[in-house]
Each structure stands twice: as C-alpha cells, then as structure tokens.
Amino acid sequence: MVAQWFAMNLLESRINLDAIAHNTATLKRLVAPAKLMCVLKADAYNHGAVAVAPVMEAAGADAFGVATMEEAHALLDAGVQVPITCWLWSPTQDPAAVLDAGITLAVASKSQAERVIAHGRGRVVIKVDTGMHRSGLIEDDWHEVMTDLHNSNVDVQGLMSHFALADDPAQPLTGAQVRKFEQAIALGRSIGLELACNHIANSPAALNIPEARFDMVRAGLSLFGEEPVVGEDHGLQPALRWVGTVTMTKPVSKGAGVSYGHTWHAPEEGVIAVVSAGYADGLPRSAQGHLEVAINGQRYPQVGRVCMDQFLIYLGDNPKDVRAGEEVEILGGQATAVSELAASMGTINYEVMCMLGGRTRRVYSGGVKGEK
Ligand SMILES: Cc1ncc(COP(=O)(O)O)c(C=O)c1O
Image (cartoon, rainbow, N blue to C red; front, side, top):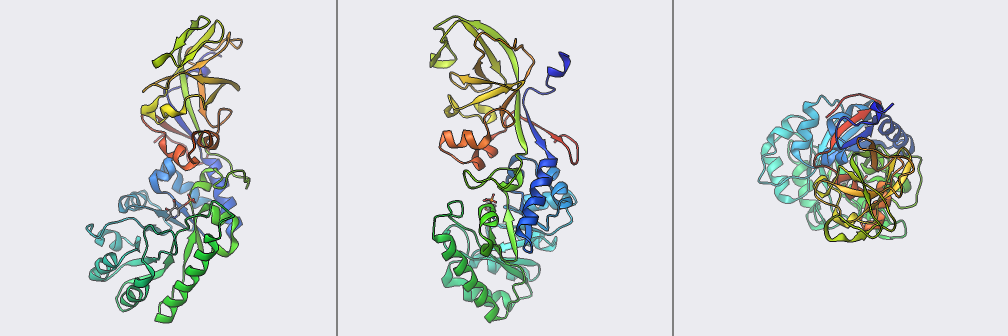
C-alpha cells in the first residue's frame, strides 16, 4: 500500500500520449478537408518532440512544423515520415543541409531568398507578413521575391503567414489578415507559382475560423489539450500533469512564519509539507498564492515563498495523514490547471507549459511508452 505512494523521481512531467492522440484526431476531424500540420517547436511545447511525433503521425498528422533547423533535423533523425517545415533561421546560417534533407524551409526575407536561390535546390514555403509584423516578407517585397523564386530551381510549395490576434475572436484584424493572405496567394499565382499548400491558421484560428484554414492548419497548443481561447471547450484532453513528491512534513504552531521572508503565517497549529519543486524547476516565485496542489485527490494551498528547489503546502491538521514520499500533483490532474495558473499569474497557458523544467523528468503513459 505505502510503496505505491512513492515516486520514482522527485519531480515528473507525466505525459499522457493517449490524450495527445485524441487531441490530434479531434483537430484532424475538425479542420478537414484542410490538412493538419502539428507544431512541435520548443520540444513539442515541452512534451518531448521525439516521443510525441509518432503518436501524432499515427493519429493523422499530415506534416510537422518547428521553429529552428536543429528542431527539424532532430525530427528527421528520429524517423518521422511526414514532411517537416521549419521557419526560424538567420541568413548567416547555411540552409544547405536542411534543403538537401528534404525539409521545407520558410523564406521570410529577401536575404533568406537570396541564400536559398544561391543553393539552387530544395523545398520552400514563402512566409508573408499579413499583419503580425514579426517575421515574414513585407508586402513591398512580395512581387520581387516570388518572381525570383519562380525563376529559380527551388520548389515553392506554398505561402504561410501567422495571425496576431486569433485568440481574441472579437478582433477584426484576423479577417483582414485572411484577406491579405488571399491577395498574396493571388499575386503568387499570377506570377506563375502553383502554391498548392498555403497555411496561416494557428490553434485558435484552426478551431474557430473555417475561412482561415486554407489548405493546411498549423496547430500547436491545442494538440497538448489546452484551449487557446479562454473559456472555450472543444473536448480536448490536457496531456500534462506535473507531479512532485512530499519530501517531509512538520508541525507548525499558530502564527509561525514559513519559508523566506516569512510572508505567510500558519492560521492555526497544524502541519506543513515540503514539495520537491521550485523556481529552478520552472515554478516562479510569482506563483505564490496562486496554486493548489492535490494529494490523493485532496487539494492543499501552496503557502509562503517559492524557493529554488522546494515550496511548502499547508495541510491544516493533516486529517488525511499525508506523509513524506507521497506524490503531489502540482499542476494539472486534480491540482490547479495550467490555464488557471496562467490566468491568475497574468500570463498564458503556452508560457506555463513551456516553463516547467529544471530537475523534471518526463514520463510517458499510453501510446508509445518510454522515458525521455
Ligand atoms: C509560425 C507559427 N505557426 C503556428 C504556431 C502554433 O500556434 P498554436 O500553438 O497557437 O497552435 C506557432 C506558435 O506560436 C507559430 O509560431
């Protein structure tokens, strides 16, 4: 009985691959007939790209998208079968290896176009800026770059762009960006480019805006079970639980201050427990007061300052007899949800998901089992 309370590692990201398969299949169904590019940048939003890619492929992923060339090579080396696109690079980098490996490279500036054309072969997608004003060709350069690529030996697969405000359905900019993207496609085709596969939609647009889906959507966050628009419910299943360990419990007397700065004082005589996660593991000090963990389904408040390696919870008079060695759901499962913590800290679920790390070990269940 006691043995099963004890965690193997002090701190784990428990990743449910069946939830990821469910979310992938849900997205795939919802956006059809558009194709589904699964975005696996930032190590699959901190879920482990190499582990989740085969699960997504089996569940219907038509393509993978990542930011950097390194991320693209890692997927290729892992044996991914569907096409891979990467879109974040500097013209000081040599695109030869990516292009020769059959990875689709985004061309987002004139100098990137020059590098690719000089290489003389490979597959590209032209990234146009339709209003995000981050990366992507400014409109003044569209004609010249499209023409130069059309006249080269490089294979232009289509256009891509990115929305700035798709997570706020009330914003008119998204519709304006859709129309700008249509103009860019029309321009490219008038120059003679086929542009068979064009994509602009991220998760919020893929889920909510049919006219934004074009030939393919690029979904990231939703595949991991988080809603990109606060309050919506598309039947997605969160894939991640962050689970730590009670390293000790101890009595506190009424009024005793705990942790650095004594910012919290015990309201009654009771028990506190020490949990094995801190800001070095991605739980910011500013999470103080915003978190309720769960032990055997019972919630307990985080109290006092979050330290580098540990934080404290208050067990009251410890009616459930919590002991050292027990597992603690810190985020997800029956604890505070990733999106709840994000909202109370004034940030977004994307950021909370990506910040967990430090001593955390990833442990997978369902799908393809293993530990990364
Ligand atoms: C270029 C690009 N496409 C698609 C995505 C996926 O966005 P989301 O996670 O909202 O689905 C991202 C992520 O920010 C991105 O940078």
